[in-house]
Structure formats: C-alpha cells, structure tokens
Length: 141
Image (cartoon, rainbow, N blue to C red):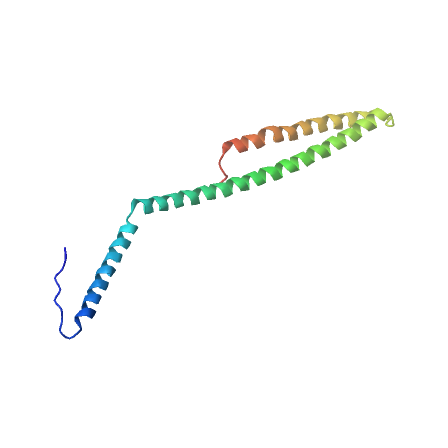
C-alpha cells in the first residue's frame, strides 16, 4: 500500500526524494525489527534460556548436596578410623595380658564390643545413607 507524495516547491526536489527514500528505509527497518521480535525462534531462545537457568540452579543445588555428602562421608570415615584405632589398642591391651583384674578385663572386653557396634553403625552410614541420598537426584530445598 504505497502512499502518493507530492513535492513541495520550498525544498529542492532531489532533497525531498532523498527524504522520502530515507523514510521508506526507516519504515522498512521498523517493520524488520518488529518481525524479528515476533519470530518464533526468539520465543524459543527465551524458553531455552529459562530452562538453562533452572537447570543451572538445580546443578548448583546438586553440587552443594554432593559437597555436603562428601564432607559427611569424610567425617564418618575419620570416625571409623578413630574407632578402629581405639579398638585395636584395647584388643592389644587384652591380648598382652597386662590387665590382671577380672573387672578391668570385663570392662575392656565390653568396650571392644561397643566399639565394634559403633564401627558397624558408621560403616552403615557410609554404605547406605550416602548412595540413597545420591539416588534421590534432587537437591534439598
């Protein structure tokens, strides 16, 4: 739908035609800019950007949970090592024969049993809780 233009006598015709050409180019640029903004690909890019941001947030949450689990596992492993060392010393003391009192022997034997149970509990935490938390696949809210 082209508009009819009449030239004015107050400006040179060449300048008026150049202005009309410039206006046409400007209108075409506006039309193209509008068309670009309404392209379905632009909406798709925005949607992909939103999904990327959401996935990035989930990744950060998962990495945080993994770091927490690794820290807890390291602590549990250190606790296991400490319990093992204490049980080893107590068994060595029992086996050495240096404890002569029956009461002390009973207490020491009971402590070795308690340490074995405690070690088993720590190992259960390491074997079962950590993989279960990782299988959940969702960061804590």
